[in-house]
Amino acid sequence: MHLMKPWYEELFSNYARAYDRECFTQGTHQEVDFIETEIAPDKHARILDIGCGTGRHAIELARRGYQVTGIDLSANQLARAREKALAAGVQPVFEQRNARAPHHLAAFDLAIMLCEGGFSLMETDAMNFAILENAVRALRPGGKFMFTCLNGLFPLARSVQEFVNAGPSSVHTLETAFDLSSLRMRARVDFTDDAGVTRQLETDERHYLPSELTWYMHTLGMRNASVFGCTAGDFRKCPPTPEHFELWVFAEKARQEAAGS
Image 1 (cartoon, rainbow, N blue to C red):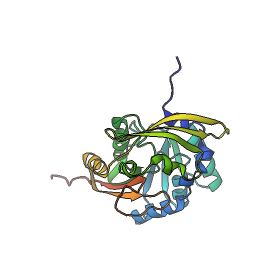
Image 2: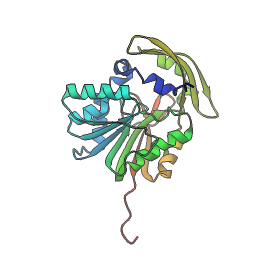
Image 3: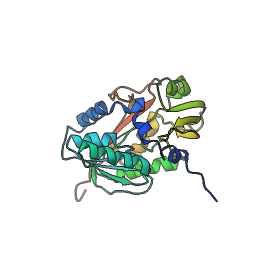
């Protein structure tokens, strides 16, 4: 009996070169500039890129002298990442891993998870939460966590279908339905893969509210959690509004308590 893969596994099975051409992947340098401002910059920081995809952030960070490990579920995306890293003359570590399962323990000073990076894409809230939980576990005490996710305020004010179809993309949204009770956007999309074949998928993505995200961070032992509005390729600190398609979250892992406290 053939079991259907989740939609995100189907999408990323042969979508690496097309992904690198998408308009929302063109702001890597500015996004990495922003990350650096948030870590001082500390060239000794060990960085984990969760859902690294084709490695655009991991490779740029490695170019700038950081030790970077990228993890992703897709073998196809990782093959493209390794190819690009070789061409760039850098050596980030790329590992095929499921971010919902424990992957590293207290090994990194910074974890990033950008352009959804798996989070927001899972079938259940518990599966999405497991990604956050394992990201926090991978941080050393005092480590920082930065991630983006879909903004639950956006579909209340604007048409997601019109927004995502406004720019040139190999993914075209044919119809959408937003469930107010679960904050899930279900859509029918078609896309052109790296073989030039047009395929159709039923997607199911979870949007989040700022208050949910700060509560998740608190629950996981993170401190100083902040949520900002986010625009791909133009990361900055601004209050979230319904005009932002994504949210950007920043938090710090609590430091170990002093002995005897």
